[in-house]
Structures are given as C-alpha cells and as structure tokens.
Length: 220
Image (cartoon, rainbow, N blue to C red):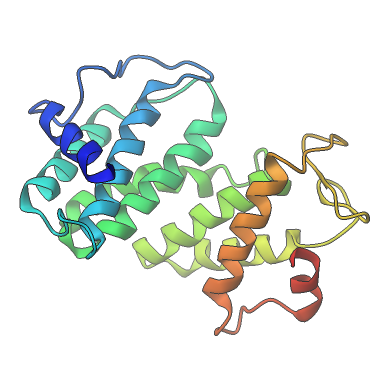
C-alpha cells in the first residue's frame, strides 16, 4: 500500500517537481498546502532509503525527490502560522536530507538547509516545552548536516535542560504535561514530548551527552 502511494506521487508529479493538487500560493494558518509537498518528499525519501522496499535506491524515485527539493528551495512556500515556518517545515526537510544523504549534491543540500536553519535562527521565539524540543531536534539535525557544532551543542543542551519536573511548561510534579501556559496538554504536546525525548535519549545514549538516571526516570 505504501509503495503504491509513492508510485502515485511519482506518476502525478509535474516536470517542475510539484503537484497539481497542491496550491503553492496557499499560506493558510492550519491547512498550509506547502507542507503537504514536504510530507510527500519525506515519504519518498524514506522509501528510497529503505532496503526492504521495492523502490529502494530507485533512480526515478531519486530524480523525483531531487526535483521536489529543487522546487521547494526555488519557491520557498511559507505559512502565516509560525509553527510551520519554524518547526514543521524545517523538521520535514531535515528528515528528507538525512534520509537522502550523499545521494544529493552538496549544492542541493546547502540550498535546502536554509529551511532547516530557520529553527535555529528563531530559537528564542516560542521556545518552551515541546516547542523547544521540536526546534532543538531541528538544530541538532542542522548541525550534523552543515558540519556546524554550535547549533548541535545548543540543541542538545536545550533538550537536556527542558527534561525537568515542576517548573513552567513541560512535565509537572504529578507527571502531567502543560503547554501554552498552565494548560493541561498531556495528550497532544505531552505525547510528542515523550516520543521526541525518547528518540533523543537513544541518539545520545553512548555519548558524553547521555541523559542522567534522574532525567531518564522522569520520562520512563
């Protein structure tokens, strides 16, 4: 089924790398259509990088992925919602670049990294609780892709610092989760927080940045 969906993306992609059913001028606060473009590219990049799929390393799929990245860097779609510009789009593009790896030219990676870098450029805006974790995961990815240790170290320190209980947004003393001030948000932001922190813990577990036992106990 997933392979069929990717083949459908390939069959409907336009020569310029876009899709006719996506309005690239749309900048809606919630239904931002440019984000759908990145979601398709991310699914394509994952399929191309997965040895278990029939389209693993497929030249036509890789070419379609490159054309899609090129369209994004040329048009740079933006939403009126800061979340897409500072978190959602950078996160998807980071995943695309990490999955595609050295299949992309250095020039293409450099151009696409502008999207990822926006998380770091705006790191002091809306950066509490899970929003901070999302941005910081993007910063770590940007540092790895660009070979820049500064955003990488910043992202690690920021996530490590937000894993605490009982102060401000985030984990509370009763292990509920709050976001946007004193609002109970264990299901939405809290779920994303635990998922991303778990991924972070695995990534750093054999490094000098590994989480302390005290912090692990807060999220396990």
